[in-house]
Image (tube, rainbow, N blue to C red):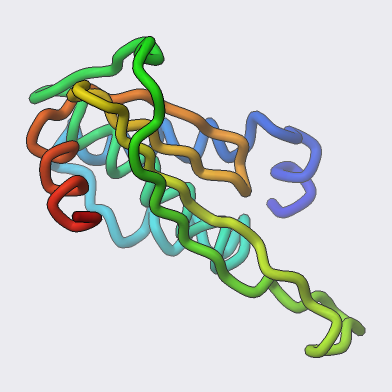
Length: 139
């Protein structure tokens, strides 16, 4: 199964993310098997990032929706960094820090940008409540 995921290249995380969205939208599908599969197939951090991104898109898709990048200047950026996954034979001291997630608000805009760096996913979501909550957190 891992060989199939590796052969799919950059489309594999997108497909898994779409499965997470489907799991949220179609409420009869249980989430735990999908999340465990993501961790098994992509590793802990990338699997977590795929599930978070898919879960966020699935949750916000009905209420808010996707948006274009706003013309406004970036206001606040929140970043989550983690040590990279240690590979077989790699020294624990030889690991780099990897940006896993970045959330950006824009001045005077309800649009929030989500960037999941390990899988190259960047989304703009219209959510006034999320934008205001992030501004309050930063301020």
